[in-house]
Length: 119
Image 1 (tube, rainbow, N blue to C red):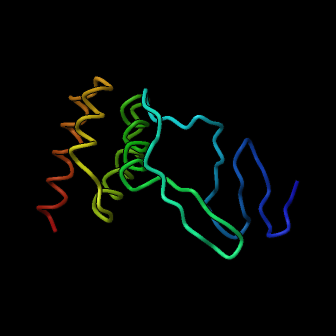
Image 2: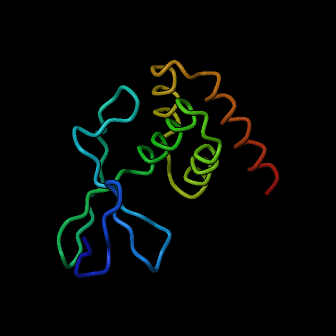
């Protein structure tokens, strides 16, 4: 099924032929790891309100893919989010400990430090 603005649905994602970016509308309640998402940003647009993950929650989502599925690309995405946005690293540390992923959290911190020092 195609929609008025050109998006089509494929496997629960909405895609557009003019971009590689896709949109997901996950079923609720929204959680990352074992915690419910609580930090949602509301953006008002001409067509309504758009609810999106805060940078910290987005960061957790990318780290979760690395933590739970060893997805290295998601680790790189988490690093990009953390270098381009204000991310609450104390919250990330707390969440990582709760998810029992301290080793991979420390791997992330070392990679981030290398990137920051290289700039």
